[in-house]
Length: 149
Image (cartoon, rainbow, N blue to C red; front, top):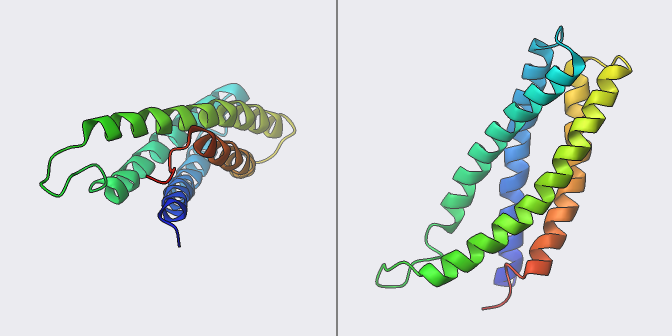
């Protein structure tokens, strides 16, 4: 398998594991805040989602890429690291904007039509994650993050 496809798989694995952890925590937070106003429940649940997702994703991404930016002598390849960081932040940023809008609107709507808070959180996050994954993978391809070196 080509190295760039392995990189895509590692990135997607890390994102999906981050989302898996954040789905569980977000559902718990949403259920705990069920008696709050719908917009507060939605907003606080989204914050919890981000904290958990970025903690898990960041840790896993670091584990997978910690050796990628080192030379054989152990020196840091700063130009490669800087280039890839700009590309990954751009790709994640575009996806996060779309994810945030879709998730917030969808969870708020589901709460308005009397879904249970935990279920509204899970459904909105699952749908938003699918949209996010599509946007992110297109962005990564467009920025050529994993182009053949």
